[in-house]
Image (cartoon, rainbow, N blue to C red; front, side, top):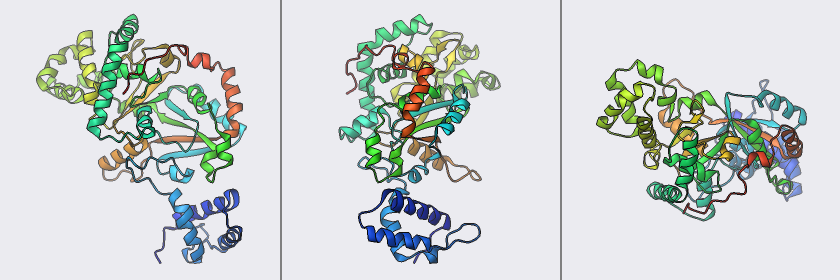
Length: 418
């Protein structure tokens, strides 16, 4: 018999207890026997489980009912399931569980004025971090390879520009930035109920909590065999770490460091970031050295940096509210909904892998010797669904209402995506 790591056995023991006592199985006699077997498990002074004290019955139960809830997904287009347990979700996220009003109040007071984080709320803790276009493909059984997926996005942008480009240009021009680049188009479509490869985040935890507490399904958790169905989630990431990996870092935060580069080095960096030739980059070096004094030069390079063709080569990247003064760097703040929602985005080039999987794969691919083996995308707060009403009331007192979230809710956009 292969002996497992004792830490893993501790987790399986705890999860088996939860399944047998809080969820239950159809065979009540077997349930009683298994619970008796659990009581017979021995541990050392440090709490490590003695694998030889586990009965074969219990090992069989682990294999059938526990292990599937702990394993990472085999990522294929045919396998896009939800998380089966909070334990399985822990493969990708650093998690915290909130079950009481007092615990929530403490968290809320700590984060309600945060300037260092971005947040995302989802009304089911089991949902993976898919964007709307991925969900559209999954629900409609559209199986597509990378090249085909890029064509779908390009078509959405082309149709969106034809249908709404003038409106977006008027808005961005009114705030000092004339642009209808590809990401500006996708941002507009995203906030007008169209599927895009952008995943919404917010600079305010209140916005994430608003979305997380909408449409809570308590009936599904009552009938569920999984503890994860009792919770909704708020995800959080450090903004400093994100902006260092953002596509606009070179242009928004990099002026001081760029000044230390010679022209050839700076030209090479611009060429790589924008996906343009060295000859084309050379023409931009002087304007960019002047902190983007030339709007035309800035628009040219930024437009190329965020073209769908260029972005499809980037697995995962943060697109925040990078500003020059009060103007959004890429024109992505182009309607009142996204402004009120303090929006930000994460781009994902995959048609079926959620961002937590892409992040883990990229980390393992590029991991340097001496760095941690494990990588988790971000933190996740799993909040019990019974607190949803309490949280909504708290948000309303702080002015976070449907009217605030959706100042343009009556405006509809024609379906231009597919």
